[in-house]
Image 1 (cartoon, rainbow, N blue to C red):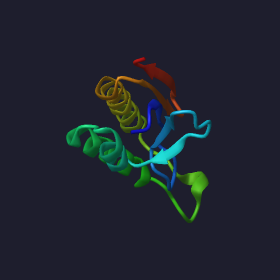
Image 2 (image 1 turned 180 degrees about the vertical axis):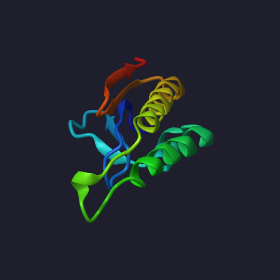
Image 3 (image 1 turned 90 degrees about the horizontal axis):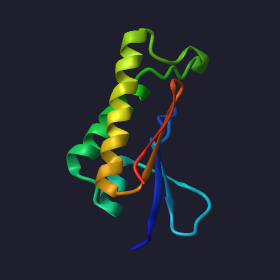
Length: 112
């Protein structure tokens, strides 16, 4: 099995929300939560919660006018960001590695 070095949880339009650094590879690989579960044993409930968190972000993407994409309600955006932080912290605990959390609201680091 390849050594997992770190994970970055960062919702981005039209891509998976996880960036995984493995072994000696200098380029992080884009991962879905389910792939992270399959490759590194992330608990099913946590992977599903990450999927739901990312789906909420993807649902506010406006393909016709990407500049108009995003949450329209600040309290909804804040709650989404807080859920992401809790997911990143849980992911760090489950994997035992450094997990970086990144959104437009800022960056946080959890774990190792």
